[in-house]
Amino acid sequence: MADKKILTNPELKRYHRQMLLDGWGREGQERLKKSTVFIAGAGGLGSPAAIYLAAAGVGRIRICDYDTLEISNLNRQILHTHTRIGKYKALSAKMTLRRINPHVEVDAFDKKIDEESIAELAGDSSVIVDCMDNFPTRYVLNKFCVEKKIALVHASIWGFEGRVTTIRIPYTACLHCIFPESPPVGVFPVVGATPGIIGCIQATEVLKCLLGMEGNLYNQLLVFDGKSMDFKKLRVKNDPECTVCSDYRK
Ligand SMILES: [Zn+2]
Image (tube, rainbow, N blue to C red; front, side, top):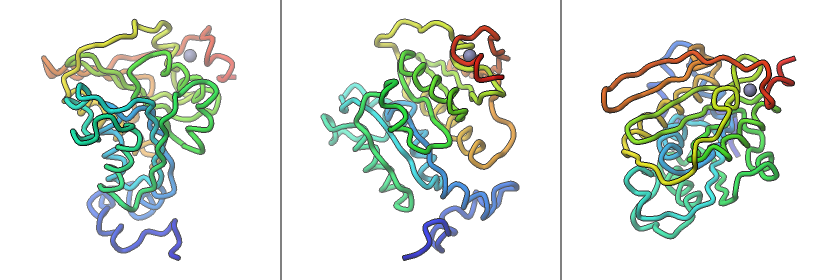
């Protein structure tokens, strides 16, 4: 059996155009192949994030979603198809990702993410992608990433608007520093292309983290407004009194 860490000829062809980049090359591609990423949520954000990370050749993708597919998900959750309504989204995601790139290993979990389950679900992932739709679960991801000092690529959307930041302790503020209180949980409007754009930005952030490239959204909240087509970057700062991250900065 071929060494799983070495790129095969079909993989070298598949990834040729990205390997032309400075700071990527064959070495970077092998690094991606050895990487594991945990994607929390196989919905509007998780769909493009997972598709582009699989297409880029991240070696192992762990994707978790507790829900089954509903018809109202299909205006934005492009991992799934009309024929899979009623199926677990995690399994549907695995099916799609393996079809896009059979060189990528995909672990699918239809579990609830909470303080008890997160360590097992995330496994040995070096980056976690927050593609959730509620802050209580995001805070679970944040606490875990703060404690383990794992990069967390956070995003949220509402209507035409999306926000992204990359958290990495001790260099950045944590999610709790930026958003100390959870906005109300409930059904909110979403234009499908918005998570499409924002999920692609998350995938770009993950790839830079894995490759050790510069230019991440550290201590910056990127705010995209699809109505005016404005991209703004807001500076964010860690809260020295933060109950989640202050002990992990010493
Ligand atoms: Zn904090």
